[in-house]
Length: 159
Image (cartoon, rainbow, N blue to C red):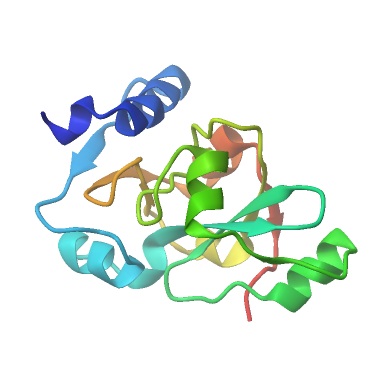
């Protein structure tokens, strides 16, 4: 079975194609499970890799999209969301909430509605790459389209 036939990858592709028919899923020979691996495979700056990080609050989940060379700040998230407790979602929670396994969590196509925050540092890259439902699959997008397709809010989220 080709990676492009896997359900999570098809889900991402459907959303991308509905938004802009020119989007394509890129299948990498090597895993892009980490931002560093993806950047090496693509020959790009690690900051151009979109890390999709799912966080859990008492009431909900929130997805933060940050540059591959940055760390998401829990303190900034707490302030922005005006809450006391927030933590990384567990691998099981990520799978249950987004429908993706860690390493393949896409910025789009989640099985549950999720609020999305986008770190402003991603704006400095002309081309960005996001996971496409599998650790070996990515797609290329620019910042403006990323904001539109995810309906995300732009914030300063990193340390």
